[in-house]
Image (cartoon, rainbow, N blue to C red; front, top):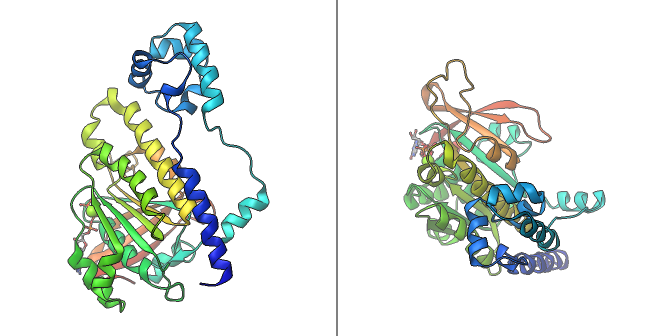
Length: 333
Ligand code: GTP
Ligand code: MG
Protein backbone atom coordinates (compact mmCIF):
# COMPACT_ATOMS: atom_id res chain seq x y z
CA UNK A 1 0.00 0.00 0.00
CA UNK A 2 1.42 3.40 -0.94
CA UNK A 3 1.59 6.24 1.53
CA UNK A 4 -1.19 8.05 -0.22
CA UNK A 5 -3.68 5.20 -0.17
CA UNK A 6 -2.75 4.46 3.46
CA UNK A 7 -3.69 7.98 4.49
CA UNK A 8 -6.85 7.77 2.41
CA UNK A 9 -7.73 4.61 4.24
CA UNK A 10 -7.16 6.30 7.57
CA UNK A 11 -9.45 9.11 6.57
CA UNK A 12 -12.19 6.64 5.68
CA UNK A 13 -11.83 4.84 8.97
CA UNK A 14 -12.14 8.09 10.85
CA UNK A 15 -15.36 8.85 9.05
CA UNK A 16 -16.73 5.36 9.68
CA UNK A 17 -16.39 5.87 13.44
CA UNK A 18 -18.37 9.05 13.16
CA UNK A 19 -21.17 7.33 11.29
CA UNK A 20 -21.37 4.57 13.84
CA UNK A 21 -21.93 6.81 16.85
CA UNK A 22 -25.41 6.23 18.18
CA UNK A 23 -27.67 8.92 16.82
CA UNK A 24 -30.05 10.64 19.22
CA UNK A 25 -33.60 9.35 19.03
CA UNK A 26 -36.93 10.95 19.86
CA UNK A 27 -36.64 9.48 23.37
CA UNK A 28 -33.77 11.91 23.96
CA UNK A 29 -36.05 14.92 23.47
CA UNK A 30 -37.15 16.97 26.47
CA UNK A 31 -40.63 16.07 27.67
CA UNK A 32 -40.84 12.88 25.64
CA UNK A 33 -41.76 9.82 27.67
CA UNK A 34 -42.78 6.43 26.26
CA UNK A 35 -46.37 7.51 25.55
CA UNK A 36 -45.38 10.67 23.68
CA UNK A 37 -42.69 8.76 21.81
CA UNK A 38 -45.31 6.32 20.65
CA UNK A 39 -47.61 9.12 19.50
CA UNK A 40 -44.76 10.69 17.55
CA UNK A 41 -43.83 7.38 15.95
CA UNK A 42 -47.42 6.63 15.07
CA UNK A 43 -47.68 9.98 13.33
CA UNK A 44 -44.52 9.13 11.40
CA UNK A 45 -42.11 11.39 13.32
CA UNK A 46 -39.18 9.13 13.92
CA UNK A 47 -36.59 11.41 12.46
CA UNK A 48 -35.44 14.34 14.59
CA UNK A 49 -34.98 16.49 11.54
CA UNK A 50 -38.61 15.87 10.54
CA UNK A 51 -39.65 17.23 13.94
CA UNK A 52 -37.20 20.13 13.91
CA UNK A 53 -38.71 21.59 10.76
CA UNK A 54 -42.32 21.54 12.04
CA UNK A 55 -44.22 24.41 13.63
CA UNK A 56 -45.81 23.79 17.07
CA UNK A 57 -49.43 23.88 15.81
CA UNK A 58 -48.59 21.50 12.96
CA UNK A 59 -46.88 18.99 15.21
CA UNK A 60 -49.62 19.33 17.82
CA UNK A 61 -52.25 18.50 15.27
CA UNK A 62 -50.44 15.67 13.52
CA UNK A 63 -49.15 13.90 16.61
CA UNK A 64 -52.16 14.76 18.78
CA UNK A 65 -50.13 16.60 21.40
CA UNK A 66 -50.56 19.89 23.23
CA UNK A 67 -49.06 22.95 21.59
CA UNK A 68 -46.81 23.84 24.51
CA UNK A 69 -45.38 20.31 24.59
CA UNK A 70 -44.94 20.41 20.81
CA UNK A 71 -43.00 23.67 21.05
CA UNK A 72 -40.69 22.16 23.65
CA UNK A 73 -40.15 19.02 21.56
CA UNK A 74 -39.40 21.05 18.43
CA UNK A 75 -36.90 23.22 20.31
CA UNK A 76 -35.18 20.07 21.56
CA UNK A 77 -35.14 18.51 18.10
CA UNK A 78 -33.53 21.62 16.65
CA UNK A 79 -30.64 21.17 19.07
CA UNK A 80 -30.25 17.42 18.61
CA UNK A 81 -31.04 16.89 14.94
CA UNK A 82 -28.23 16.67 12.51
CA UNK A 83 -29.22 19.68 10.42
CA UNK A 84 -26.13 19.32 8.28
CA UNK A 85 -24.08 22.30 7.25
CA UNK A 86 -22.20 23.95 4.50
CA UNK A 87 -19.02 22.61 3.02
CA UNK A 88 -16.74 24.50 0.72
CA UNK A 89 -16.83 23.93 -2.99
CA UNK A 90 -13.17 22.95 -2.74
CA UNK A 91 -14.00 20.18 -0.27
CA UNK A 92 -16.72 18.93 -2.60
CA UNK A 93 -14.35 18.97 -5.53
CA UNK A 94 -11.87 17.02 -3.46
CA UNK A 95 -14.45 14.41 -2.69
CA UNK A 96 -15.50 14.22 -6.34
CA UNK A 97 -11.86 13.56 -7.26
CA UNK A 98 -12.03 10.29 -5.37
CA UNK A 99 -14.89 9.03 -7.56
CA UNK A 100 -14.01 5.74 -9.25
CA UNK A 101 -15.73 4.02 -12.13
CA UNK A 102 -16.75 0.41 -12.53
CA UNK A 103 -17.19 -1.32 -15.84
CA UNK A 104 -20.38 -3.24 -16.56
CA UNK A 105 -18.71 -5.46 -19.15
CA UNK A 106 -20.75 -3.81 -21.91
CA UNK A 107 -18.97 -0.77 -23.35
CA UNK A 108 -22.21 0.76 -24.64
CA UNK A 109 -23.61 0.80 -21.12
CA UNK A 110 -20.36 2.17 -19.67
CA UNK A 111 -20.38 4.98 -22.24
CA UNK A 112 -23.98 5.84 -21.41
CA UNK A 113 -22.84 6.34 -17.81
CA UNK A 114 -19.87 8.48 -18.78
CA UNK A 115 -17.31 5.68 -18.42
CA UNK A 116 -18.92 3.25 -16.00
CA UNK A 117 -20.87 3.07 -12.74
CA UNK A 118 -19.70 5.81 -10.36
CA UNK A 119 -18.82 5.47 -6.70
CA UNK A 120 -20.42 7.83 -4.15
CA UNK A 121 -23.66 7.33 -6.02
CA UNK A 122 -26.90 5.45 -5.74
CA UNK A 123 -27.82 3.84 -9.02
CA UNK A 124 -31.39 2.76 -9.41
CA UNK A 125 -32.03 0.13 -12.07
CA UNK A 126 -35.68 -0.27 -12.80
CA UNK A 127 -37.67 -2.25 -15.31
CA UNK A 128 -40.18 -5.04 -15.66
CA UNK A 129 -39.55 -8.68 -14.66
CA UNK A 130 -36.82 -10.36 -16.65
CA UNK A 131 -35.43 -7.07 -17.93
CA UNK A 132 -32.00 -7.85 -16.49
CA UNK A 133 -31.84 -5.98 -13.17
CA UNK A 134 -30.56 -8.97 -11.21
CA UNK A 135 -28.14 -9.85 -14.00
CA UNK A 136 -26.62 -6.36 -13.78
CA UNK A 137 -26.29 -6.86 -10.02
CA UNK A 138 -24.45 -10.15 -10.45
CA UNK A 139 -22.16 -8.74 -13.13
CA UNK A 140 -21.23 -5.63 -11.15
CA UNK A 141 -20.56 -7.80 -8.11
CA UNK A 142 -18.05 -9.84 -10.10
CA UNK A 143 -16.48 -6.82 -11.81
CA UNK A 144 -15.99 -4.99 -8.50
CA UNK A 145 -13.38 -7.62 -7.62
CA UNK A 146 -11.31 -6.76 -10.71
CA UNK A 147 -8.40 -4.35 -10.25
CA UNK A 148 -8.73 -0.70 -11.25
CA UNK A 149 -6.79 -1.17 -14.50
CA UNK A 150 -9.19 -3.98 -15.42
CA UNK A 151 -12.13 -1.63 -14.88
CA UNK A 152 -12.88 -2.89 -11.37
CA UNK A 153 -12.67 -1.43 -7.88
CA UNK A 154 -10.55 -4.10 -6.16
CA UNK A 155 -13.02 -4.39 -3.31
CA UNK A 156 -15.66 -6.52 -1.69
CA UNK A 157 -19.38 -6.67 -2.25
CA UNK A 158 -22.43 -6.78 -0.04
CA UNK A 159 -25.57 -8.15 -1.62
CA UNK A 160 -28.93 -7.68 0.11
CA UNK A 161 -31.20 -10.21 -1.49
CA UNK A 162 -34.91 -9.68 -0.85
CA UNK A 163 -36.35 -12.00 -3.48
CA UNK A 164 -34.05 -14.99 -3.12
CA UNK A 165 -32.68 -14.52 -6.60
CA UNK A 166 -28.96 -14.43 -5.82
CA UNK A 167 -27.31 -17.34 -7.62
CA UNK A 168 -23.74 -18.35 -6.69
CA UNK A 169 -23.56 -20.54 -9.80
CA UNK A 170 -24.16 -17.48 -11.95
CA UNK A 171 -21.41 -15.58 -10.11
CA UNK A 172 -19.03 -18.49 -10.72
CA UNK A 173 -19.88 -18.48 -14.42
CA UNK A 174 -19.34 -14.72 -14.77
CA UNK A 175 -16.16 -14.80 -12.69
CA UNK A 176 -14.62 -17.48 -14.85
CA UNK A 177 -15.43 -15.43 -17.95
CA UNK A 178 -13.37 -12.47 -16.66
CA UNK A 179 -10.55 -14.65 -15.36
CA UNK A 180 -11.32 -14.62 -11.64
CA UNK A 181 -11.23 -17.82 -9.62
CA UNK A 182 -14.94 -18.55 -8.92
CA UNK A 183 -14.28 -19.48 -5.29
CA UNK A 184 -12.33 -16.30 -4.79
CA UNK A 185 -15.22 -14.32 -6.21
CA UNK A 186 -17.75 -16.04 -3.97
CA UNK A 187 -15.55 -15.38 -0.93
CA UNK A 188 -15.64 -11.67 -1.59
CA UNK A 189 -19.38 -11.35 -2.16
CA UNK A 190 -21.28 -11.26 1.14
CA UNK A 191 -24.93 -12.11 0.75
CA UNK A 192 -27.71 -11.51 3.22
CA UNK A 193 -31.28 -12.55 2.68
CA UNK A 194 -33.61 -9.80 3.97
CA UNK A 195 -36.82 -11.29 5.29
CA UNK A 196 -38.81 -8.08 5.55
CA UNK A 197 -38.32 -4.34 5.20
CA UNK A 198 -37.30 -3.87 8.84
CA UNK A 199 -34.63 -6.51 8.42
CA UNK A 200 -33.51 -4.90 5.18
CA UNK A 201 -33.07 -1.55 6.98
CA UNK A 202 -31.15 -3.19 9.84
CA UNK A 203 -28.75 -4.80 7.40
CA UNK A 204 -27.41 -1.36 6.52
CA UNK A 205 -26.15 -1.02 10.11
CA UNK A 206 -24.46 -4.37 9.69
CA UNK A 207 -22.81 -3.10 6.51
CA UNK A 208 -21.39 -0.15 8.45
CA UNK A 209 -19.94 -2.56 11.00
CA UNK A 210 -18.46 -4.81 8.31
CA UNK A 211 -16.90 -1.81 6.59
CA UNK A 212 -14.44 -1.47 9.46
CA UNK A 213 -12.78 -4.75 8.48
CA UNK A 214 -13.27 -5.09 4.77
CA UNK A 215 -13.18 -2.67 1.89
CA UNK A 216 -16.76 -2.61 0.66
CA UNK A 217 -16.97 -1.02 -2.78
CA UNK A 218 -20.38 -2.17 -3.93
CA UNK A 219 -23.66 -2.55 -2.08
CA UNK A 220 -26.55 -4.15 -3.94
CA UNK A 221 -30.14 -4.08 -2.76
CA UNK A 222 -32.12 -6.39 -5.02
CA UNK A 223 -34.90 -5.44 -4.79
CA UNK A 224 -35.09 -2.16 -2.90
CA UNK A 225 -38.87 -1.94 -2.97
CA UNK A 226 -40.38 -5.46 -2.99
CA UNK A 227 -40.78 -5.79 0.80
CA UNK A 228 -41.99 -2.22 1.18
CA UNK A 229 -44.55 -2.76 -1.52
CA UNK A 230 -45.81 -5.98 0.04
CA UNK A 231 -45.97 -4.60 3.58
CA UNK A 232 -47.36 -1.11 3.09
CA UNK A 233 -50.47 -1.61 1.05
CA UNK A 234 -53.01 0.98 0.06
CA UNK A 235 -53.13 4.76 -0.02
CA UNK A 236 -53.26 5.14 3.75
CA UNK A 237 -49.83 3.52 4.07
CA UNK A 238 -48.20 5.41 1.24
CA UNK A 239 -46.78 8.26 3.33
CA UNK A 240 -45.24 5.90 5.88
CA UNK A 241 -43.80 3.71 3.16
CA UNK A 242 -42.19 6.64 1.40
CA UNK A 243 -40.80 7.99 4.65
CA UNK A 244 -39.20 4.65 5.53
CA UNK A 245 -37.82 4.20 2.04
CA UNK A 246 -36.46 7.72 2.09
CA UNK A 247 -34.59 7.12 5.32
CA UNK A 248 -33.29 3.78 4.10
CA UNK A 249 -31.94 5.45 0.97
CA UNK A 250 -30.32 8.21 2.99
CA UNK A 251 -28.46 5.62 5.02
CA UNK A 252 -27.40 3.84 1.87
CA UNK A 253 -26.16 7.11 0.39
CA UNK A 254 -24.12 7.67 3.52
CA UNK A 255 -22.45 4.29 2.99
CA UNK A 256 -21.76 5.21 -0.64
CA UNK A 257 -20.11 8.48 0.38
CA UNK A 258 -18.10 7.21 3.33
CA UNK A 259 -16.89 4.05 1.61
CA UNK A 260 -16.44 5.70 -1.76
CA UNK A 261 -18.63 2.85 -2.97
CA UNK A 262 -21.46 2.25 -5.42
CA UNK A 263 -24.94 1.48 -4.16
CA UNK A 264 -27.03 -0.34 -6.73
CA UNK A 265 -30.73 -0.69 -6.03
CA UNK A 266 -33.30 -2.40 -8.20
CA UNK A 267 -36.92 -1.48 -8.54
CA UNK A 268 -39.73 -3.02 -10.52
CA UNK A 269 -41.91 -0.99 -12.82
CA UNK A 270 -45.46 -0.80 -11.67
CA UNK A 271 -47.97 -2.20 -14.12
CA UNK A 272 -50.51 0.53 -14.71
CA UNK A 273 -53.80 -0.24 -16.42
CA UNK A 274 -53.78 3.22 -18.04
CA UNK A 275 -50.15 2.86 -19.20
CA UNK A 276 -51.20 3.53 -22.76
CA UNK A 277 -51.47 7.23 -21.95
CA UNK A 278 -49.62 7.45 -18.66
CA UNK A 279 -45.88 7.22 -18.22
CA UNK A 280 -45.03 3.51 -18.50
CA UNK A 281 -41.62 4.10 -16.91
CA UNK A 282 -43.00 4.89 -13.49
CA UNK A 283 -41.07 2.98 -10.84
CA UNK A 284 -42.58 1.58 -7.66
CA UNK A 285 -41.00 3.87 -5.09
CA UNK A 286 -42.25 6.90 -6.95
CA UNK A 287 -40.59 10.26 -6.58
CA UNK A 288 -38.63 9.63 -3.43
CA UNK A 289 -36.56 6.83 -4.89
CA UNK A 290 -36.16 8.91 -8.02
CA UNK A 291 -34.79 11.91 -6.19
CA UNK A 292 -32.52 9.95 -3.88
CA UNK A 293 -30.74 8.14 -6.68
CA UNK A 294 -27.92 9.79 -8.54
CA UNK A 295 -28.41 7.71 -11.66
CA UNK A 296 -31.54 6.00 -12.85
CA UNK A 297 -31.45 3.34 -15.52
CA UNK A 298 -34.67 2.17 -17.10
CA UNK A 299 -34.31 -1.30 -18.63
CA UNK A 300 -36.49 -2.88 -21.20
CA UNK A 301 -36.40 -6.05 -23.25
CA UNK A 302 -35.93 -5.84 -26.97
CA UNK A 303 -35.76 -8.24 -29.93
CA UNK A 304 -33.31 -11.15 -29.96
CA UNK A 305 -32.64 -11.11 -26.20
CA UNK A 306 -31.25 -7.59 -26.38
CA UNK A 307 -31.76 -5.15 -23.53
CA UNK A 308 -32.12 -1.41 -23.82
CA UNK A 309 -31.00 0.79 -20.95
CA UNK A 310 -32.16 4.39 -20.82
CA UNK A 311 -30.45 6.89 -18.56
CA UNK A 312 -32.99 9.10 -16.83
CA UNK A 313 -32.35 12.42 -15.09
CA UNK A 314 -28.65 12.23 -14.29
CA UNK A 315 -27.01 15.30 -12.71
CA UNK A 316 -24.28 15.74 -15.31
CA UNK A 317 -24.88 13.38 -18.22
CA UNK A 318 -27.16 13.66 -21.23
CA UNK A 319 -30.13 11.32 -21.42
CA UNK A 320 -29.57 8.49 -23.83
CA UNK A 321 -29.85 4.79 -24.50
CA UNK A 322 -27.52 1.82 -24.69
CA UNK A 323 -28.09 -1.64 -26.09
CA UNK A 324 -26.51 -4.67 -24.48
CA UNK A 325 -27.09 -8.41 -24.19
CA UNK A 326 -27.11 -10.91 -21.38
CA UNK A 327 -25.06 -13.95 -22.42
CA UNK A 328 -23.99 -17.02 -20.47
CA UNK A 329 -20.72 -15.18 -19.79
CA UNK A 330 -22.57 -12.12 -18.49
CA UNK A 331 -23.29 -8.61 -19.75
CA UNK A 332 -21.83 -7.91 -23.18
CA UNK A 333 -22.29 -5.47 -26.05
P1 GTP B 1 -37.29 -9.51 -11.82
O1 GTP B 1 -36.37 -9.67 -10.66
O2 GTP B 1 -38.20 -10.66 -12.00
O3 GTP B 1 -38.03 -8.20 -11.80
O4 GTP B 1 -36.41 -9.51 -13.16
P2 GTP B 1 -34.94 -8.96 -13.41
O5 GTP B 1 -35.02 -7.66 -14.10
O6 GTP B 1 -34.11 -9.06 -12.21
O7 GTP B 1 -34.42 -10.00 -14.50
P3 GTP B 1 -33.11 -10.87 -14.47
O8 GTP B 1 -31.93 -10.02 -14.29
O9 GTP B 1 -33.30 -11.99 -13.55
O10 GTP B 1 -33.08 -11.36 -15.96
C1 GTP B 1 -33.42 -12.65 -16.32
C2 GTP B 1 -33.04 -12.83 -17.78
O11 GTP B 1 -31.61 -12.77 -17.91
C3 GTP B 1 -33.44 -14.15 -18.31
O12 GTP B 1 -34.74 -14.08 -18.83
C4 GTP B 1 -32.42 -14.37 -19.40
O13 GTP B 1 -32.82 -13.70 -20.56
C5 GTP B 1 -31.19 -13.69 -18.88
N1 GTP B 1 -30.26 -14.66 -18.29
C6 GTP B 1 -30.15 -15.01 -17.00
N2 GTP B 1 -29.21 -15.94 -16.83
C7 GTP B 1 -28.72 -16.20 -18.04
C8 GTP B 1 -27.70 -17.09 -18.54
O14 GTP B 1 -27.08 -17.84 -17.79
N3 GTP B 1 -27.45 -17.06 -19.87
C9 GTP B 1 -28.13 -16.23 -20.71
N4 GTP B 1 -27.83 -16.25 -22.00
N5 GTP B 1 -29.07 -15.39 -20.27
C10 GTP B 1 -29.37 -15.37 -18.97
MG1 MG C 1 -34.48 -9.71 -10.26
